[in-house]
Amino acid sequence: MDKIVSLCKRRGFVFPGSEIYGGLSNSWDYGPLGVELKNNIKNLWWKRFVQTREDMVGLDAALIMNPKTWEASGHLNEFTDPLVECKECHTRFRINEHWSDKVWWDLARYLAQESLSSKEREEAVQDALKVCPQCKAKGKFTVPKNFNLMFKTYVGVAEGKADTVYLRPETAQSIFVNFKNILDTTRKQLPFGVGQVGKAFRNEITPGNFVFRTREFEQMEVEYFVREKEWKKWFEHWRGEMFEWIKEIGLDTKSIHEYEHPEKDRAHYSKKTIDFEYDFPFGRKELYGLSYRADFDLKNHEKASGADLRYTDVNSERFICEKCGAEKLFKYPPGVSEKIGGARAKMSSMTIKPGKCEKCSGKYVPENKFWPHVIEPSLGVDRSFLAVLVSAYTEEPVKSNDHGPGTEMRVVLKLKPQLAPYKAAVFPLLKNKPELIKLAHKVYDDLRKHFLVAWDDRGNIGKRYFSQDEIGTPYCITVDFDSLKDKTVTLRDRDTMKQKRVKIDDLKEILHRQLFG
Ligand code: GAP
Image (cartoon, rainbow, N blue to C red):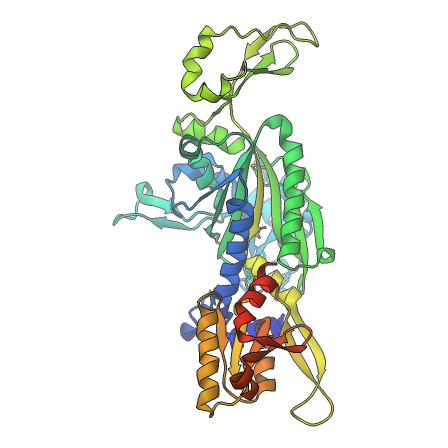
């Protein structure tokens, strides 16, 4: 990790946040190359999951929402971590992170007894947690408190309860709150999903491991709305899609492990959650999550807001058997379903006869309004960024051209070309030859209209190659004296280090093909 953090600082991927003021605990700023890599990840995700899918639309909602949102979503009450502080060194710990599940659950169950005296509580905590992981002090813990992870702030000038708002802890809720708007404006029919990329904020007790856990981060989330009976099928669909995505950004699937949360550890809204864990240098940790949120969110927002957040099935009439719950879908006669938007009135005059239940002869009753169920693939941008860097970072011995015989190490980021900040770098062979500079600049300017391209005329060519390898630039283009005669250049491949002569006129096409297939 140290090597990656140092490379990120040295080459402008990630800087410590507010550095000149001594930083701010585990906050990070993405530098000129970092912002490109991060944007490339987000753009690839947006293209793959929103723009190229017929069943998806996008959203970019406000970060600060009406605080009733967080009451209805359960975040005000449930989005908490158990926290203790060591009275000796004043370090705070999330119990569920530093002690085993069993220790925490046994303690939590014990402390839940209201009849306990404060002495009994105090003793139970010291018995269970024993030694401070930081300073090794014994028996110095505070009694655990539940700590809400949402950042509180105020709107307007007053700082009272009425003006309290929260920075969103997940992007998901604005999708649920906009469900009706999206339905009304897009006329999407189930199954369909809404994707959103944006910032989320959590007052994490123990941020750390570079950009892995921070208090301000970005998520790429899909809320995918389905019929309840189809949730398993769509859960599997998104599970597969997440694997495809992991491959697309160049992570080795052998480093990915699925972990299904036991019921007691699931978030309050979830009926099933799988984490996709990745072998980071600091251990196997959650990269992404996939949850089945059922109809928890839409139902609760409807209850709290009074807005009708049910989905109306316009193309088929759904009937449920009163006796056994069997479902039957009535298909409109040909030609009717297309006009159905304006023809709901007609429905009453149409004689829909679902007949008796085939299973139990019970009576079918119509049910065409319901809360769709939700499958949620939730991906962290910053964790994607880190995993991409970790898996792309390579050190390999190469024959040294510059320092006589022998080998030296080159650091190369073997990024997928689509993700690389620069797609190519252009070099004039020599810095002091105006005719070379002129032609190289023309190549650079022409390519820059289509791709992000670097320019480098410092030092020798070997050093320039190494410098571009270190930031993952897939191709280096050198303009030399032959270029002046035959309008060709040397194209050098980052991974193989092989070089070939290509025509200047073909460069755009070659790069395009290599980048986008
Ligand atoms: N809407 C569901 C949700 O937010 P989550 O598992 O809490 O679920 C989803 O978060 C993803 O967001 C995680 O898998 C991770 O990639 C990212 N994430 C969560 N907390 C983070 C943090 N403090 N710093 C960086 N990324 C984080």
